[in-house]
Length: 585
Image 1 (tube, rainbow, N blue to C red):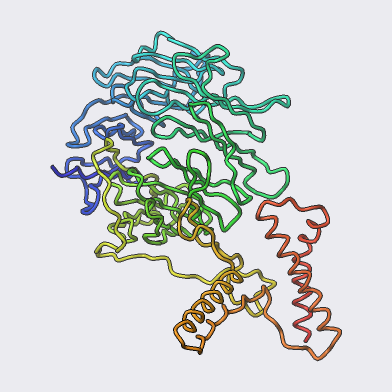
Image 2: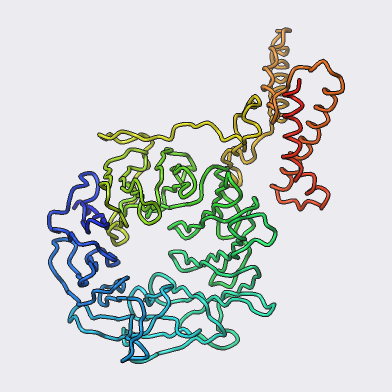
């Protein structure tokens, strides 16, 4: 039996519609759509139900044939979500008070989808973590209330079955999968005490030995916690709003690892700068981090937090594993140009490179073969639209939003795991009417002070590092320097000469040509004829070379001394001085 074709929900100012996924990408015939603008849309976890609010009511239908399941008179609903088994619909609207009711109305409501009756009305003023978290079998449900975690069992929201109370619990994440359920809890530091994350297994929530793991750290205004799919470990990205050293506009981030076995670690990242994204592989044994000042590094780590493969550096700030885990997309969205690098994770070989300019969202189709990129409002209010791609770089379908209209969201219909098995990775673009959109090479940015100075041989402001396989015994475990490569060629030539002499041929083979010399950051000007000027130029270049070496040491993690930092800060002044000297020749 052929697997189903996932649907794609499209929400915008012109209404809500459902498309059948690739290859047809046509309107879903069983769903007529809604011409009114929708506040929100969502699918159930297994994809069988589709719900939306159009500002008049909340509607829930079967995704397969569009038949109505339930309708709720909730015109102000801003967010909605289904419980994992589709038994409960959670709706949320902005909290408000009235003169008649000082406490205000319960703005978080839980509805029984079978009967359409209200199960429980709750108060949830903050939109962050508005929806309760269920275990996969719905035996446990958790929500945060006044620095406590309240646990409910079997969707009985009239009785709190258990509580986890800690001072100032700020965030929590319930583990995926079945029983036993685990929960990761974050408590921010105060009065000089560090922040910490602890792991618990329900229902053991108190006592000196209750915590499965505990990790303390400083420099954390907020955290993002991610469980792996098998619920054996958690990644915690801690961040501060401001980097006190002034090195980064993004604040300062650190990455930590906790396992349910009790092991913890701070993940050591070999390049300084922001941590843009962290993603678990679906195999739960690896994770990918994108980090460092641009061009950013991307590295895959194992459960010992050791690097396994380094993708080098490039213009990227996001990582997306396919649902089957066999493909990884490294992308640069937002203030970058939308480059998407597609990698075969098993072979660590690049499949394709495409560009989705101005994309504000990216998501994998459950089939592991296709992705959708979109330019949505309010992030960008012009050039709204979306594209459905094959991972080899071909665009199968694209839709531009008409002038005067806005696209707000595109969302794939989820499918149960196992519906789409992993397929062999293709390295050639699939046939398509719209063709391939491989990223075209662009001229590197040059600072204004250097634009009328001849370009260096590389033509790049920052050299990008090549990929590097760090697995034990992998070929090319360490990249050879140019000097080492030259010496290696000489050794090979001498070995060949000895072999020829042993055969009676006394004429040795010629040495291979030396690698072309690498251009300096400034091209060598001709002599000015003025010895004093030439001496000044040589002196300035010597200082710039020293600064370049200091910057490389800083990028490798070395802490520079005060006088060295002062030298680095004089780089622009020296470049201007060099420019003036060369122009005056």
